[in-house]
Length: 192
Image (tube, rainbow, N blue to C red; front, top):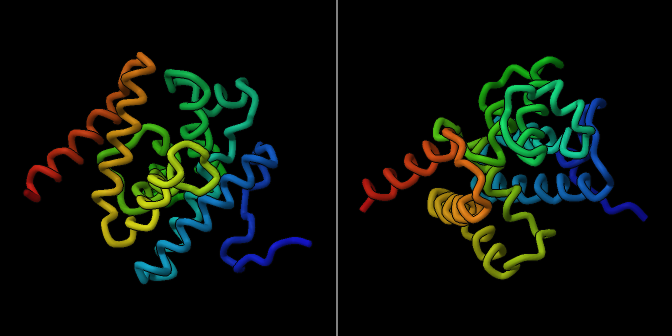
């Protein structure tokens, strides 16, 4: 028996998406989390729909062959894990998506962007905190519950962890990532 889902959470992957069944489950969990936050935060429907469009697009090409990722994100450095966002954003734009906030959320969801509006910040957090992730479950659950009341604080905590992971990987830190971190750090310092 299929679980009942609210109409706005029904899979709305684009026809061009290349995702495994496991990836689709991940996307669905991210959508459920973002929708729950929107409800708790009393976000207007138009904004909630922007959040969910970004969610359904963010991993649309995550499981695509490297040739397709290269076709859509040929200038993006780094491994395929980083290229799928730019590739999905480029493909979505070619198919008619015009909302810059949605496109930026999708393009930079793996690395962060200082100029994000709430769509990007929400996707970044929901993607990291969705309940299917097995590492640090209690901590992630606590952050997910805290997000509606303290989205900036939760965003900073997640960014700090992801930046530390990037440093440990010994990959170069992309320019948008360090600008993103510096914007969060400056915001934290100015609120003291």
